[in-house]
Image (cartoon, rainbow over all chains, first blue to last red; front, side):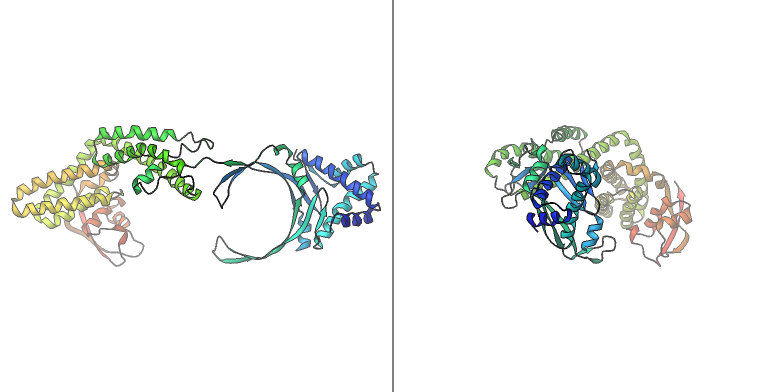
Length: 90
Length: 390
Protein backbone atom coordinates (compact mmCIF):
# COMPACT_ATOMS: atom_id res chain seq x y z
CA UNK A 1 0.00 0.00 0.00
CA UNK A 2 1.58 3.21 -1.11
CA UNK A 3 0.90 6.74 0.00
CA UNK A 4 -1.94 7.32 -2.45
CA UNK A 5 -3.79 4.17 -1.47
CA UNK A 6 -3.29 5.00 2.14
CA UNK A 7 -4.78 8.46 1.66
CA UNK A 8 -7.75 7.03 -0.18
CA UNK A 9 -8.46 4.57 2.62
CA UNK A 10 -8.02 7.29 5.23
CA UNK A 11 -10.23 9.82 3.47
CA UNK A 12 -12.94 7.21 3.07
CA UNK A 13 -12.90 6.55 6.79
CA UNK A 14 -13.27 10.08 8.07
CA UNK A 15 -15.14 11.70 5.24
CA UNK A 16 -12.45 14.02 3.96
CA UNK A 17 -11.29 14.57 0.42
CA UNK A 18 -8.01 12.98 -0.59
CA UNK A 19 -6.31 16.38 -0.88
CA UNK A 20 -7.58 17.43 2.52
CA UNK A 21 -6.44 14.11 4.00
CA UNK A 22 -2.99 14.61 2.48
CA UNK A 23 -2.70 18.03 4.08
CA UNK A 24 -3.89 16.77 7.46
CA UNK A 25 -1.46 13.86 7.38
CA UNK A 26 1.33 16.35 6.83
CA UNK A 27 0.14 18.38 9.81
CA UNK A 28 -0.16 15.29 12.00
CA UNK A 29 3.36 14.25 11.08
CA UNK A 30 4.72 17.68 11.87
CA UNK A 31 3.00 17.57 15.25
CA UNK A 32 4.55 14.19 15.97
CA UNK A 33 7.95 15.39 14.76
CA UNK A 34 7.76 18.24 17.23
CA UNK A 35 6.99 15.74 19.96
CA UNK A 36 9.98 13.62 19.07
CA UNK A 37 12.32 16.56 18.77
CA UNK A 38 11.40 17.43 22.34
CA UNK A 39 12.40 13.93 23.35
CA UNK A 40 8.91 12.66 23.99
CA UNK A 41 7.45 9.46 22.61
CA UNK A 42 4.12 8.89 20.94
CA UNK A 43 2.23 6.02 22.48
CA UNK A 44 -0.98 4.91 20.82
CA UNK A 45 -2.88 2.03 22.34
CA UNK A 46 -3.50 -0.75 19.89
CA UNK A 47 -0.74 0.55 17.63
CA UNK A 48 2.47 0.86 19.56
CA UNK A 49 5.10 3.32 20.66
CA UNK A 50 7.12 5.55 18.41
CA UNK A 51 10.06 6.93 20.29
CA UNK A 52 13.48 8.41 19.77
CA UNK A 53 16.37 6.37 21.03
CA UNK A 54 20.01 7.23 21.31
CA UNK A 55 22.49 4.83 19.81
CA UNK A 56 25.93 5.05 21.31
CA UNK A 57 29.03 5.66 19.31
CA UNK A 58 30.95 2.55 18.39
CA UNK A 59 33.99 1.34 16.57
CA UNK A 60 33.35 -0.86 13.59
CA UNK A 61 35.86 -2.70 11.47
CA UNK A 62 35.64 -3.06 7.75
CA UNK A 63 36.12 -6.80 7.38
CA UNK A 64 37.62 -6.59 3.92
CA UNK A 65 40.47 -4.20 4.65
CA UNK A 66 40.57 -4.11 8.44
CA UNK A 67 39.99 -0.38 8.61
CA UNK A 68 38.58 0.74 11.92
CA UNK A 69 35.95 3.41 11.94
CA UNK A 70 34.45 5.39 14.75
CA UNK A 71 30.75 5.62 14.12
CA UNK A 72 29.27 8.65 15.87
CA UNK A 73 26.34 8.47 18.26
CA UNK A 74 22.95 8.97 16.67
CA UNK A 75 19.31 9.35 17.41
CA UNK A 76 16.89 7.02 15.71
CA UNK A 77 13.15 6.70 15.60
CA UNK A 78 12.14 3.39 17.02
CA UNK A 79 8.81 1.66 16.62
CA UNK A 80 7.66 -0.95 19.09
CA UNK A 81 4.33 -2.57 18.23
CA UNK A 82 1.84 -3.01 21.01
CA UNK A 83 1.28 -6.45 22.46
CA UNK A 84 -2.22 -6.42 21.05
CA UNK A 85 -0.97 -5.93 17.52
CA UNK A 86 1.74 -8.51 17.99
CA UNK A 87 -0.82 -11.10 19.05
CA UNK A 88 -2.99 -10.20 16.13
CA UNK A 89 -0.40 -10.96 13.49
CA UNK A 90 0.78 -14.20 15.04
CA UNK B 1 11.50 15.12 27.90
CA UNK B 2 10.75 11.44 28.18
CA UNK B 3 7.01 11.99 28.36
CA UNK B 4 4.60 9.66 26.69
CA UNK B 5 2.13 11.43 24.49
CA UNK B 6 -1.02 9.36 24.21
CA UNK B 7 -3.80 9.53 21.65
CA UNK B 8 -5.85 12.26 23.34
CA UNK B 9 -2.84 14.48 23.94
CA UNK B 10 -1.76 14.02 20.35
CA UNK B 11 -5.24 14.90 19.17
CA UNK B 12 -5.20 18.08 21.20
CA UNK B 13 -1.90 19.15 19.73
CA UNK B 14 -3.13 18.26 16.26
CA UNK B 15 -6.37 20.15 16.82
CA UNK B 16 -4.52 23.35 17.65
CA UNK B 17 -2.44 23.26 14.49
CA UNK B 18 -4.91 21.91 11.94
CA UNK B 19 -7.86 24.13 12.72
CA UNK B 20 -10.24 21.20 12.40
CA UNK B 21 -13.03 20.59 14.87
CA UNK B 22 -12.26 18.45 17.88
CA UNK B 23 -14.54 15.64 16.80
CA UNK B 24 -13.12 15.52 13.29
CA UNK B 25 -9.51 15.66 14.39
CA UNK B 26 -10.06 12.90 16.94
CA UNK B 27 -11.58 10.72 14.26
CA UNK B 28 -8.81 11.57 11.86
CA UNK B 29 -5.91 10.77 14.19
CA UNK B 30 -7.62 7.60 15.31
CA UNK B 31 -8.27 6.42 11.79
CA UNK B 32 -4.74 7.32 10.76
CA UNK B 33 -3.27 4.76 13.15
CA UNK B 34 -6.15 2.34 12.65
CA UNK B 35 -5.52 2.23 8.93
CA UNK B 36 -1.89 1.46 9.43
CA UNK B 37 -2.69 -1.22 11.99
CA UNK B 38 -5.30 -2.87 9.80
CA UNK B 39 -3.21 -2.87 6.68
CA UNK B 40 -0.12 -4.16 8.42
CA UNK B 41 -1.96 -6.90 10.23
CA UNK B 42 -3.46 -7.91 6.89
CA UNK B 43 0.09 -8.49 5.70
CA UNK B 44 0.28 -5.38 3.56
CA UNK B 45 3.13 -2.96 3.44
CA UNK B 46 2.16 0.61 4.31
CA UNK B 47 4.30 3.39 2.93
CA UNK B 48 3.55 6.95 4.02
CA UNK B 49 5.31 9.88 2.46
CA UNK B 50 7.31 11.88 4.94
CA UNK B 51 6.99 9.18 7.54
CA UNK B 52 8.20 5.74 6.62
CA UNK B 53 7.24 2.20 5.79
CA UNK B 54 5.58 -0.38 7.99
CA UNK B 55 5.71 -4.00 7.03
CA UNK B 56 5.56 -7.49 8.38
CA UNK B 57 8.67 -9.58 8.47
CA UNK B 58 8.72 -13.30 8.97
CA UNK B 59 11.20 -14.47 11.55
CA UNK B 60 11.81 -18.12 10.79
CA UNK B 61 12.30 -20.94 13.26
CA UNK B 62 15.68 -21.19 14.82
CA UNK B 63 17.40 -23.68 17.02
CA UNK B 64 18.82 -22.72 20.34
CA UNK B 65 20.17 -24.38 23.46
CA UNK B 66 18.60 -24.19 26.87
CA UNK B 67 21.28 -22.60 28.96
CA UNK B 68 20.32 -24.48 32.12
CA UNK B 69 19.82 -27.97 30.78
CA UNK B 70 21.86 -27.92 27.58
CA UNK B 71 18.86 -29.24 25.63
CA UNK B 72 18.37 -28.15 22.06
CA UNK B 73 15.16 -26.25 21.64
CA UNK B 74 13.43 -24.72 18.69
CA UNK B 75 12.38 -21.11 18.96
CA UNK B 76 9.32 -20.89 16.77
CA UNK B 77 9.21 -18.35 14.01
CA UNK B 78 6.90 -15.39 14.23
CA UNK B 79 5.83 -12.27 12.42
CA UNK B 80 7.51 -9.04 13.31
CA UNK B 81 6.47 -5.53 12.38
CA UNK B 82 9.30 -3.41 11.16
CA UNK B 83 9.25 0.32 10.72
CA UNK B 84 11.75 2.03 8.45
CA UNK B 85 11.67 5.80 8.69
CA UNK B 86 12.28 7.76 5.51
CA UNK B 87 15.71 9.33 5.13
CA UNK B 88 14.21 12.79 5.60
CA UNK B 89 12.64 11.84 8.91
CA UNK B 90 15.81 10.04 9.94
CA UNK B 91 17.84 13.15 9.33
CA UNK B 92 15.32 15.27 11.20
CA UNK B 93 15.39 13.00 14.24
CA UNK B 94 19.16 12.86 14.22
CA UNK B 95 19.46 16.66 13.90
CA UNK B 96 21.34 17.20 17.19
CA UNK B 97 24.01 14.73 16.11
CA UNK B 98 24.08 15.54 12.42
CA UNK B 99 27.39 17.33 12.71
CA UNK B 100 29.15 14.12 13.62
CA UNK B 101 30.73 12.09 10.92
CA UNK B 102 32.17 8.67 10.78
CA UNK B 103 35.86 8.95 11.48
CA UNK B 104 38.43 6.58 10.15
CA UNK B 105 40.73 5.51 12.92
CA UNK B 106 44.02 5.30 11.11
CA UNK B 107 46.34 4.92 14.07
CA UNK B 108 48.55 2.09 12.94
CA UNK B 109 47.90 -0.30 15.77
CA UNK B 110 51.57 -1.00 16.08
CA UNK B 111 52.41 -3.83 13.82
CA UNK B 112 53.68 -6.50 16.14
CA UNK B 113 57.25 -7.63 15.91
CA UNK B 114 56.88 -11.32 15.13
CA UNK B 115 59.31 -13.69 13.51
CA UNK B 116 62.62 -12.13 14.50
CA UNK B 117 61.71 -12.28 18.16
CA UNK B 118 61.87 -15.45 20.20
CA UNK B 119 58.62 -16.60 21.72
CA UNK B 120 59.63 -15.57 25.25
CA UNK B 121 60.59 -12.09 24.26
CA UNK B 122 57.54 -11.79 22.11
CA UNK B 123 55.15 -12.09 24.98
CA UNK B 124 57.14 -9.59 26.97
CA UNK B 125 57.60 -7.22 24.10
CA UNK B 126 53.88 -6.91 23.62
CA UNK B 127 53.81 -4.92 26.85
CA UNK B 128 55.58 -1.88 25.61
CA UNK B 129 54.15 -1.27 22.14
CA UNK B 130 50.73 -0.60 23.65
CA UNK B 131 51.29 2.91 25.00
CA UNK B 132 52.47 4.28 21.66
CA UNK B 133 49.52 3.61 19.37
CA UNK B 134 46.77 4.67 21.75
CA UNK B 135 46.78 8.42 22.00
CA UNK B 136 43.06 8.49 21.28
CA UNK B 137 41.96 5.69 23.48
CA UNK B 138 44.00 7.15 26.30
CA UNK B 139 45.77 4.55 28.37
CA UNK B 140 47.43 6.69 30.98
CA UNK B 141 47.92 3.72 33.24
CA UNK B 142 50.51 2.27 30.91
CA UNK B 143 53.68 4.05 32.01
CA UNK B 144 53.25 3.11 35.64
CA UNK B 145 53.65 -0.64 35.36
CA UNK B 146 56.82 -0.11 33.41
CA UNK B 147 58.25 2.03 36.17
CA UNK B 148 57.44 -0.66 38.67
CA UNK B 149 59.24 -3.18 36.58
CA UNK B 150 62.29 -1.03 36.47
CA UNK B 151 62.47 -0.59 40.19
CA UNK B 152 61.74 -4.18 40.98
CA UNK B 153 64.89 -5.77 39.59
CA UNK B 154 66.96 -3.62 41.95
CA UNK B 155 65.13 -4.93 44.94
CA UNK B 156 65.64 -8.43 43.77
CA UNK B 157 69.33 -8.09 43.28
CA UNK B 158 69.58 -7.01 46.89
CA UNK B 159 67.89 -10.13 48.03
CA UNK B 160 70.35 -12.22 46.05
CA UNK B 161 68.03 -15.08 45.41
CA UNK B 162 68.90 -17.39 42.55
CA UNK B 163 65.32 -17.97 41.44
CA UNK B 164 64.57 -14.32 41.04
CA UNK B 165 67.71 -13.32 39.27
CA UNK B 166 66.50 -14.91 36.10
CA UNK B 167 63.38 -12.75 36.04
CA UNK B 168 64.90 -9.27 36.14
CA UNK B 169 66.97 -10.21 33.14
CA UNK B 170 64.00 -11.17 31.09
CA UNK B 171 62.11 -8.09 32.21
CA UNK B 172 64.85 -5.67 31.35
CA UNK B 173 65.26 -7.08 27.88
CA UNK B 174 61.94 -6.02 26.40
CA UNK B 175 62.45 -2.44 27.44
CA UNK B 176 65.41 -2.10 25.21
CA UNK B 177 64.04 -4.32 22.47
CA UNK B 178 60.89 -2.63 21.24
CA UNK B 179 62.47 0.75 20.63
CA UNK B 180 64.46 -0.19 17.59
CA UNK B 181 61.58 -2.26 16.34
CA UNK B 182 59.14 0.58 16.71
CA UNK B 183 60.82 2.20 13.72
CA UNK B 184 59.97 -0.75 11.56
CA UNK B 185 56.35 -0.60 12.57
CA UNK B 186 55.11 1.99 10.06
CA UNK B 187 56.48 -0.07 7.21
CA UNK B 188 54.20 -2.94 8.08
CA UNK B 189 50.74 -1.40 8.36
CA UNK B 190 49.21 -4.21 6.34
CA UNK B 191 49.43 -6.70 9.12
CA UNK B 192 45.86 -7.50 9.83
CA UNK B 193 43.87 -6.09 12.69
CA UNK B 194 43.14 -9.58 13.91
CA UNK B 195 46.74 -10.01 14.90
CA UNK B 196 46.69 -6.88 16.93
CA UNK B 197 43.56 -7.75 18.76
CA UNK B 198 44.69 -11.21 19.67
CA UNK B 199 47.97 -9.86 20.93
CA UNK B 200 46.71 -6.96 22.99
CA UNK B 201 44.50 -9.14 25.16
CA UNK B 202 47.18 -11.62 26.22
CA UNK B 203 49.46 -8.65 26.74
CA UNK B 204 47.09 -7.12 29.22
CA UNK B 205 46.63 -10.40 31.00
CA UNK B 206 50.34 -10.97 31.02
CA UNK B 207 50.97 -7.56 32.54
CA UNK B 208 48.53 -8.16 35.34
CA UNK B 209 50.14 -11.54 35.97
CA UNK B 210 53.52 -9.91 36.04
CA UNK B 211 52.48 -7.34 38.62
CA UNK B 212 50.94 -10.05 40.77
CA UNK B 213 54.17 -12.03 40.54
CA UNK B 214 56.21 -9.01 41.54
CA UNK B 215 54.01 -8.33 44.52
CA UNK B 216 54.26 -11.95 45.64
CA UNK B 217 58.01 -11.92 45.30
CA UNK B 218 58.38 -8.77 47.38
CA UNK B 219 56.23 -10.32 50.08
CA UNK B 220 58.45 -13.35 50.00
CA UNK B 221 61.58 -11.27 50.33
CA UNK B 222 60.18 -9.37 53.27
CA UNK B 223 58.99 -12.48 55.00
CA UNK B 224 62.34 -14.10 54.36
CA UNK B 225 64.02 -11.26 56.20
CA UNK B 226 61.51 -11.14 59.04
CA UNK B 227 61.12 -14.80 59.93
CA UNK B 228 64.47 -16.45 59.43
CA UNK B 229 64.60 -17.61 63.04
CA UNK B 230 61.38 -19.53 62.77
CA UNK B 231 62.46 -21.22 59.61
CA UNK B 232 65.77 -22.30 61.03
CA UNK B 233 64.02 -23.60 64.11
CA UNK B 234 61.65 -25.80 62.17
CA UNK B 235 64.43 -26.93 59.88
CA UNK B 236 66.52 -28.17 62.75
CA UNK B 237 63.74 -30.39 63.87
CA UNK B 238 63.41 -31.86 60.43
CA UNK B 239 67.13 -32.48 60.29
CA UNK B 240 67.23 -34.25 63.64
CA UNK B 241 64.74 -36.68 62.30
CA UNK B 242 66.73 -37.26 59.16
CA UNK B 243 69.84 -37.88 61.22
CA UNK B 244 68.18 -40.44 63.41
CA UNK B 245 66.58 -42.43 60.68
CA UNK B 246 69.62 -42.06 58.43
CA UNK B 247 71.77 -44.17 60.69
CA UNK B 248 69.28 -47.01 60.61
CA UNK B 249 68.64 -47.42 56.96
CA UNK B 250 69.90 -45.31 54.13
CA UNK B 251 67.03 -45.97 51.75
CA UNK B 252 64.35 -45.40 54.31
CA UNK B 253 65.94 -42.16 55.31
CA UNK B 254 65.63 -40.79 51.82
CA UNK B 255 61.94 -41.60 51.78
CA UNK B 256 61.40 -40.16 55.21
CA UNK B 257 63.26 -36.96 54.59
CA UNK B 258 60.92 -36.42 51.71
CA UNK B 259 58.01 -37.18 53.97
CA UNK B 260 59.23 -34.77 56.62
CA UNK B 261 59.35 -31.99 54.11
CA UNK B 262 55.86 -32.93 53.10
CA UNK B 263 54.66 -32.76 56.65
CA UNK B 264 56.01 -29.29 56.96
CA UNK B 265 54.64 -28.10 53.67
CA UNK B 266 51.42 -29.97 53.10
CA UNK B 267 49.55 -26.74 52.69
CA UNK B 268 51.81 -25.40 49.99
CA UNK B 269 51.58 -25.83 46.29
CA UNK B 270 55.33 -25.81 45.95
CA UNK B 271 55.54 -29.24 47.45
CA UNK B 272 56.67 -30.72 44.19
CA UNK B 273 59.59 -28.39 43.75
CA UNK B 274 60.92 -29.30 47.14
CA UNK B 275 60.41 -32.99 46.64
CA UNK B 276 62.43 -32.72 43.51
CA UNK B 277 65.32 -31.27 45.46
CA UNK B 278 65.10 -33.51 48.47
CA UNK B 279 65.51 -36.96 46.94
CA UNK B 280 68.61 -35.81 45.09
CA UNK B 281 70.42 -34.91 48.23
CA UNK B 282 69.23 -38.06 49.89
CA UNK B 283 70.66 -40.12 47.07
CA UNK B 284 73.91 -38.25 47.30
CA UNK B 285 74.13 -38.93 50.96
CA UNK B 286 73.41 -42.60 50.29
CA UNK B 287 76.51 -42.94 48.23
CA UNK B 288 78.54 -41.24 50.89
CA UNK B 289 77.13 -43.59 53.47
CA UNK B 290 78.38 -46.62 51.62
CA UNK B 291 81.91 -45.36 51.36
CA UNK B 292 82.46 -43.62 54.69
CA UNK B 293 81.65 -43.85 58.37
CA UNK B 294 78.21 -43.50 59.79
CA UNK B 295 79.18 -40.49 61.87
CA UNK B 296 80.52 -38.63 58.87
CA UNK B 297 77.45 -39.30 56.80
CA UNK B 298 75.18 -37.90 59.41
CA UNK B 299 77.22 -34.72 59.45
CA UNK B 300 77.41 -34.29 55.72
CA UNK B 301 73.78 -35.13 55.40
CA UNK B 302 72.73 -32.51 57.84
CA UNK B 303 74.79 -29.95 56.00
CA UNK B 304 73.36 -30.86 52.66
CA UNK B 305 69.82 -31.00 53.85
CA UNK B 306 70.31 -27.70 55.57
CA UNK B 307 71.39 -26.15 52.29
CA UNK B 308 68.49 -27.52 50.36
CA UNK B 309 66.02 -26.67 53.05
CA UNK B 310 67.15 -23.07 53.21
CA UNK B 311 66.67 -22.82 49.49
CA UNK B 312 63.30 -24.41 49.40
CA UNK B 313 61.96 -22.82 52.55
CA UNK B 314 63.03 -19.35 51.59
CA UNK B 315 60.61 -19.61 48.74
CA UNK B 316 57.61 -20.17 50.96
CA UNK B 317 58.16 -19.42 54.62
CA UNK B 318 54.47 -18.95 55.30
CA UNK B 319 53.87 -22.63 54.83
CA UNK B 320 56.11 -23.48 57.74
CA UNK B 321 54.08 -21.25 59.91
CA UNK B 322 50.75 -22.84 59.30
CA UNK B 323 51.72 -26.42 59.96
CA UNK B 324 54.53 -25.81 62.38
CA UNK B 325 52.58 -27.20 65.33
CA UNK B 326 52.31 -30.56 63.63
CA UNK B 327 56.07 -31.01 63.28
CA UNK B 328 56.61 -31.32 67.03
CA UNK B 329 55.66 -35.00 67.07
CA UNK B 330 57.62 -38.11 66.47
CA UNK B 331 56.21 -41.32 65.12
CA UNK B 332 56.83 -44.47 67.14
CA UNK B 333 56.69 -48.05 65.96
CA UNK B 334 53.79 -48.77 68.25
CA UNK B 335 50.58 -48.93 66.29
CA UNK B 336 47.61 -47.29 67.90
CA UNK B 337 45.08 -49.03 65.68
CA UNK B 338 44.53 -50.40 62.21
CA UNK B 339 41.85 -48.65 60.24
CA UNK B 340 40.10 -49.87 57.10
CA UNK B 341 39.29 -46.91 54.92
CA UNK B 342 35.62 -46.58 54.09
CA UNK B 343 34.02 -44.55 51.39
CA UNK B 344 33.75 -40.87 52.21
CA UNK B 345 36.57 -40.97 54.72
CA UNK B 346 39.59 -38.76 54.40
CA UNK B 347 42.93 -38.92 56.12
CA UNK B 348 42.01 -35.72 57.91
CA UNK B 349 38.89 -37.31 59.30
CA UNK B 350 40.81 -40.36 60.49
CA UNK B 351 43.31 -38.05 62.10
CA UNK B 352 40.47 -36.29 63.86
CA UNK B 353 39.12 -39.58 65.07
CA UNK B 354 42.33 -41.02 66.51
CA UNK B 355 44.34 -37.93 67.42
CA UNK B 356 41.57 -35.46 68.04
CA UNK B 357 42.77 -33.02 65.40
CA UNK B 358 42.64 -32.91 61.64
CA UNK B 359 46.08 -31.37 61.43
CA UNK B 360 48.00 -34.55 62.15
CA UNK B 361 46.89 -36.47 59.07
CA UNK B 362 50.31 -36.07 57.40
CA UNK B 363 51.75 -38.48 59.97
CA UNK B 364 49.27 -41.13 58.93
CA UNK B 365 50.10 -40.48 55.30
CA UNK B 366 53.81 -40.67 56.02
CA UNK B 367 53.58 -43.81 58.11
CA UNK B 368 51.56 -45.62 55.47
CA UNK B 369 53.76 -44.24 52.70
CA UNK B 370 50.89 -42.50 50.95
CA UNK B 371 52.40 -39.97 48.61
CA UNK B 372 49.18 -38.42 47.38
CA UNK B 373 46.55 -37.92 50.04
CA UNK B 374 43.88 -37.44 47.39
CA UNK B 375 44.39 -40.85 45.83
CA UNK B 376 43.42 -43.08 48.73
CA UNK B 377 41.13 -45.96 47.90
CA UNK B 378 38.31 -47.58 49.81
CA UNK B 379 39.36 -50.71 51.72
CA UNK B 380 42.90 -49.47 52.32
CA UNK B 381 44.45 -50.74 55.52
CA UNK B 382 45.84 -47.79 57.41
CA UNK B 383 48.14 -48.18 60.37
CA UNK B 384 47.75 -45.40 62.87
CA UNK B 385 51.07 -44.78 64.66
CA UNK B 386 51.34 -43.58 68.24
CA UNK B 387 52.73 -40.05 68.26
CA UNK B 388 55.09 -38.82 70.94
CA UNK B 389 55.72 -35.15 71.53
CA UNK B 390 59.35 -34.19 70.97
